[in-house]
Each structure stands twice: as C-alpha cells, then as structure tokens.
Length: 285
Image: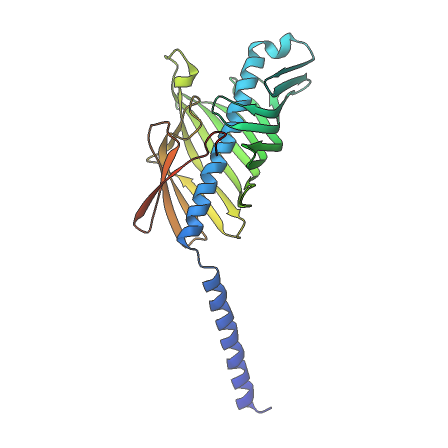
C-alpha cells in the first residue's frame, strides 16, 4: 500500500467516525417533549417525597407527644389501613405500614415507611432517616429511595431543616416512565409561630438536584434564589416559587408554581411558550 492509498483510507475512516458521531448526536438531540416529560415526572417525584415526609411527620409528632409510648419499649397500633409500630433502642424506629390507606390529601398509599430517629426533631442535630419499602401512591406511582431530614437549628433566626434525598427513583407503573435522582434542599420555617395551627405555617425551600430518566437523559434542577419554593403542611403541593430545569446541558425550561394558591397547578416555560399542568392528585389519578 503506497502513502497516497494510506492517506485516503485514513480520511475515509475519519469521515466515517465523524458521520457516526453526527448521527449519534442527532439521534440523542433533546426535544421539548423530553424536557416536558422530565419536568412532569420531577414534580410528581417531589410531590411523592413531600407526601412521605408529611406522613412521617404526622405519625412521629404524635409519638413524640406521648414520649414514644410513654417509655414502653414497643408499641403497635392500627387505624383505617395504617399501622404504626414503635421500637425504642439507641435510635427510635417507627415502622408505618399502609394497606389501602387514604390520607387527608386523598392519595391512596400502600407499602412501608421506616423512620429511624435520633433525638427529638425540635432539637438541633436531630436526624430522621426515612426508608421506603414497596411504597406506592394511587396504585400507580412506585416511590423508592432514602430521605434524611436533619435539624440544622436556627439559621438567621429561623428554624431550618436539611432534606437530603438519596438514590431515589419514582416510577409511573402505568407508563413505565421513571426518574432517578439525588436532591438536597433546605426547609426554612418562614412563619407560623404566632398562629394557632401548624397547618397555616409556611416553609421556604431552596436547593438543587440531579437525575436521569428511562431514556438516558440527564438533568439538573435548581430552585430560584430570587423566587424560592414555598410549601405548607396543609397543602400536598408546592404553592409558590420557581425552578430551572436543564436537560443534557443543551435545553432548559422554567417551572413556575404560582403565587400561593393550593391548587396543584404549575407552568412549564420553554422555547417562548408556556404550558399549564397539574401535579400529583388524589386517588383519582
């Protein structure tokens, strides 16, 4: 083989590599539909983990009020499809088991939440680790992963919690679509100390996360510093604020949750268009 033929073969090889790379890039181009799907599933994932936290808070608060079964080493109760077992050792472990239980927000729950707690959650550095086992919402959403809630104490004169979601996955059992993610947020108690009910309290949520979906798309999500999220224990959805979603580093969207209404609605804005959608609803979804 002479030098001219060798150069020609090398050029053909380089052209083939370039063509393959170009085709691969085109095949994996992020579309608006990809972004919308990830946005919807990410909102559903947040709703699901907010639900998990709210359920654990509802049960553990009652148990703390009774000093975890009044120094009894073990306790088990069952009501309307939700059973609670308490075991006290170095850490207090509360096992919440659901069998067709429907909570106040109308979502049907099955499976188990295991809450392992060190200290009382109103104390600084207290920690609650939530682990899920076969936990589903509305027979259609499988929620997996671990959430660690830590009391950071008073930050800038406001009670602040860290909410760390690890190795999480939320799967729509009907469509097979899923998102896997790791999120880290802070929840700051914004108001409520002068009010008569915790259900009127509001929390400011800040932080970020990253994940992927069933199609191999990777994404990051960041809560706006200027328009952070607001949540209220009496509402199963984010009620206010804005997040930025970036998919595969080449396409982005803004998710806006409104200005304080508990209506479960949010708006996706991308490519100059807005689209209003609804968050995870009750048992009718």
